Image (cartoon, rainbow, N blue to C red):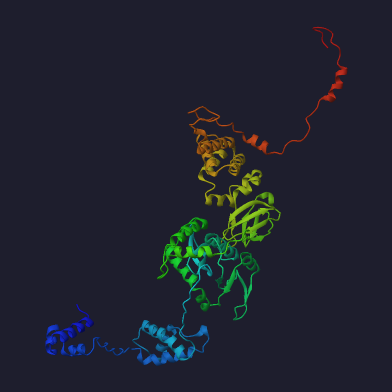
Length: 549
């Protein structure tokens, strides 16, 4: 079917080439003679007349709605009319009938901004396109995301660092949006990008960087650790205006937060740890580098290849992003950090330790020695205990093991398995509650020097043959370790066995021998019997063979 423009062109061509009359042209193309006259008059069809607006049952009330909206201009922001309130007033005060709520909402949505413009309260917002130079500017923001973390729906925070020229973005999800996560996100982004932007990095007024906004100016009082961090890296910062207007000043990263969340975090990701999620996010970032932003001619990776050589090099030394605390260890062998409790070895009870708090974990030091490392808790008032920290005291108090919180958490994490439980039940039945539990604790001490899976294999083997001693578990665990590395089934020549013969295993020390080896060396002198030599002077002389002395 011809369009109207094509029809006009055909009519004009036949009239010009064949000299056909208006009647013959109308018969040929089966149109009205008025259409032929219009085509001969202009190559473009005349625009269709606009239809008069349809009458609506809302028409008698439109003036009243406009008056309400004008009055709202001077009302407090939180006490202005909603569409529902306007609808209720029209029904109650003007007896409105037959008007649907959706019809009224459409009218209010259309008229409210126009009334503001008519009153001079607002002007249409205009955006000015920006051209970015490679390697110069970047933008930073946090976004809220939900994660199914270890079976629990948890709100987390996604740090985003985006280069303005190429659109290259680095994402990292953390348990909090505190200063530790803010600084660690920067360090991760700098390492991925391989350098630093030479110009400004745009931020909103998050408390990790800004301690105080000075009125309506661009002046800011910065957080001291943030000032030290950006001084260490030589960052030039630009703080956007507060509120929605400031979001438009870093619209690239604002849009990137939503794009990444919609494309990669829907449906809600199911992970065991945040480290697992962040490893996957790094892979997604690599895939996203092959996309094109809008109508750009180059992909993100091609554009970043241009600005990568222009970035400033990273500093030689690393800035410590973790926050340092110095809590005391209470009598439960716990330290309190940010209203959560974490266990340390019982030998540290009553002492002060140093805690280095990161975005997703914390490390505890006794002096310069690391004594514990925990995944950071998100909810407040929760404990995180490690059973290994309490084994020494449980040797003296074996009855406390069965109902301990540390044991319950070990079961939840899977470090205390059903194999442990089965061996514990068997050894308690054979040796009694106290001695059986002490034997279990001796087995748990093996985890400190051997891989978890090897100890579990050793327990299972010992249980299968009815050997209920920790020494047998240790021997079987070492056999499992040697079998895994191939030492017990070597088929090539070796210093300890001929070709084709398995190499002999070195003798395995018993648990008693291992305990003695762990003791400090004995520096005492050897005993001497020289003092007893003086007794030889009183020995009676021999009388002869068979005589009694």
